[in-house]
Length: 171
Picture (tube, rainbow, N blue to C red):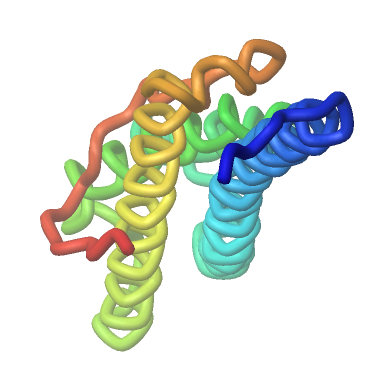
């Protein structure tokens, strides 16, 4: 018995191909959007830790005239007025490096210094998480087939490096 292909069969075949292409494109777009949300959440978590550290520094650091204190206060002022989260992360990274370099010179009591070190470690950890999310997102949108649907998005600027080492597991 011979099978005849009718116009109806061709129409159904074309319809299913179009549906599968549409669903594939939507799936790729959704994957890009989910990775972008991961970067946004990492930025929010980073900003919370940065705000906690800024408040702690302002509360416990006086208005000294030594160069290190002026540099820290200058960086604090720049961070507060910055609206671009990526530049704020760069400024926070510069503040982290400055504070790490002069940790023993800070005018803190031993108890306050111990709490401050915990805040420093927390922000370094959040920076590592942000950088891993940003790197994963940038690799994703540069890879085929995602590059086809990610033409209108730009990669996340990563002008800082991690201050600590750690293992981030990607799924």
